[in-house]
Length: 283
Image (cartoon, rainbow, N blue to C red; front, side, top):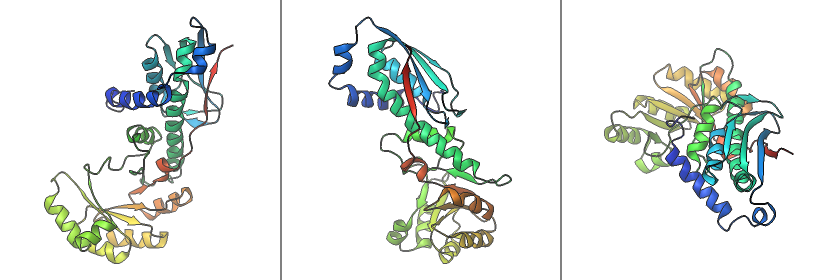
């Protein structure tokens, strides 16, 4: 883990809130039946094949619960792991391990689930195509930092991080501004010179208007593949093209071959199931 990818002050805040949610009133089960002096060795294990992600976050969970715990990562972030692979080992006070178990697994399962799904979409891009698979802002509230990191570990790319990081004119902006051209020209006049202007369109007519207004990126919203192919032909490199809206795994190959520069997939973060990871105590 590097501080630029997962800055500790930010992830510590996320973890602290998660621990407070789970341990706010204590752990009555552990306190009542586990001896104070009991020591344990526990292993984080993949129950099914996954792309590994979130091991450093699991480590941080255990260390925030008890700084005396010893955590050893056994798998690299972004690596493929088969069923039964040990991802990490944590040793020390049994009580402390049990108190951190669920929170550590929740983060690792969520992040590995996102990384695994992303890798599946990335692998679906045919060889020779340069199309990027990207995420969207459809992230779990409070977990965007971790989920977007997981997308990168799965081989994908990040879209704009928040509303202040890029200009993206959507359908409601167009209505409020009075049209595609009006929205693009107003954004061009007011946005920082370092910002590209992206505009969503849902028809070839809107595409022509966006191109004539010199949009840098055009988002092709919910277009079928023949329409996307025609949009690529008409654009002829004058703008980057992004396909979005209802993207399924089955369409990745055909949209990539159609020639779009990026495919944004909300499903990477808004509906991906958690990976199956367990914590096993040594007997």
